[in-house]
Image (cartoon, rainbow, N blue to C red; front, side):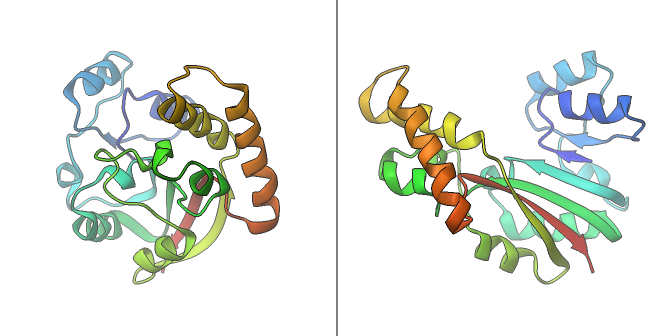
Length: 188
């Protein structure tokens, strides 16, 4: 199941690979586009109450969810025992976040309601999940830096943004604080 599946492209690829796919998307226009690709989506997690899944993914979705504790509880009930929960979110402890400060695009207020670090992610899910792995999303530093530079200077394109994105990744090799992380949890 993919939560916040957008236009269904991730699920379309998973389906082609042989997965039985489900997803949610609250935006009716995006859901309609997914449907045109053969991907039927529910509007919310409540549409899947009583079901359980081997894998649930949230790709840059968790930071948008207003009722965080309720959603974490729902996710926990939807993941099968020993199932996997994969979540990608921006990391406010990254170099690019510190460099751009209030202009850091991944703060994205008011659309991003929450901001996460590795510690908060592990703590939020500790009740029912064990954090198994954290992977960097190395290209996010470039994208976020491009947007941040635009917010800061008004320039639509900036080589400096690429430099900051690269610098963020280089610093993260030591600090392990990348612009965004993918968290792989296993249900206990």
